[in-house]
Image (cartoon, rainbow, N blue to C red):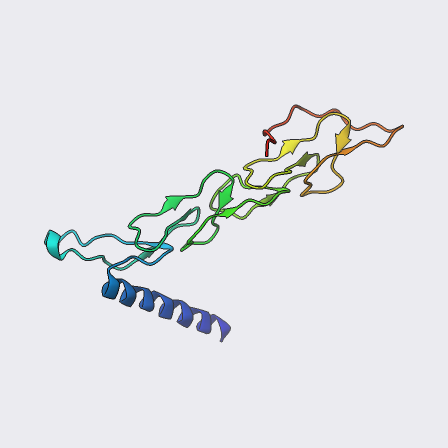
Length: 153
């Protein structure tokens, strides 16, 4: 029953988008519109709007989708904006949700496409860390490799 309601709501949104585009001749945000190439130039009209694929977005009236910048993502089709990757996460692929930084790595800044490896003598106690912690005195932390991603905020 709920699945039917979701389908009906999506159909209504799509129908409203088509009516909107025909009335205003502006492509709705989150969609791209191709022009009817068979019509004479002075009578050209948009054909049905198509949703922007994941990893891209569009504003109202745009006839193309813009890819998300590095460190941003849009995991669903029909996006009107790309979302900045939060601290403690990495956004390697613009069409997927952010991924927690693994143990031994961190991301102190927003908008990162990768996580940095903790410097020698430090560690992270959990995934999704925004900073590395000094090893307690009298203990040692494994030596780590050089940072994999610049952490300049």
